[in-house]
Image (cartoon, rainbow, N blue to C red; front, side):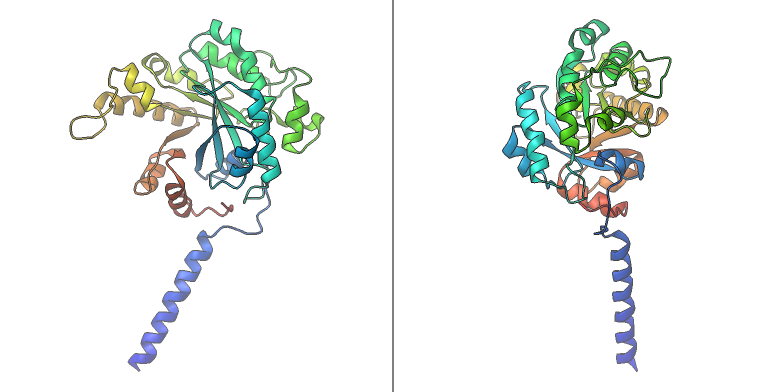
Length: 320
């Protein structure tokens, strides 16, 4: 009798494990509903995770099957090389599709153009437009100090006939001809590209994802204003640059906890993101990713193991 009960118990346990696994395993028959994988996941209420990228065609092919949901292509401190970025995007296409079935992972680009003031952004918005013309899926604006600069940033990413129209933003600044190469990367017609290449979530059907780095004391003072500009999808507090700006380059106290000023800065940006319904970006680790998600982190930087732990925690079904 004891043997039969033990066997029955093992069968129940096995069934429970199978059931739980079935609830958290990726759906192998998943069909993408969007071009931008990162936006699709955020719409599902799922956190997203990214990795870094740079280089050209071969690097794109290598990252076509990355574990990450999007690639942060670095041109803030690296070379401002649009030829390499175009080749990188082509490599992603030729090496794809992604494991989720998307044509490519999403690509968000950081630039040396900074959100420091209106004059700077007016003089340099063309860099944002050249970036999107490569087929990239978004831009992350560093040192977002000025709400006026952020407005121009958003306008630079939209076509003049983009809908919806909002009174706080001027007419879009992207021009005809910018859709040619980008539409080929996305795998749609040029006409369809001009409809879908708009900023989300301002346009619910948009496929462009814009972010801000609220990463110095001046940006922090305007955190609520810059994150409240329509067309922004996410923001981060940039602890490295924030520490330099606050004259706390290490950012931690003697016992390795986050310095109170740094913790206060992080909290302020997180609260601004929650208030304006933006995704908050923060480092996540394998040991704390679930707690970070519970706190409100929706974009994680920290590597594959942390991402996979987070995906299991939120019971993601999209393949990765």
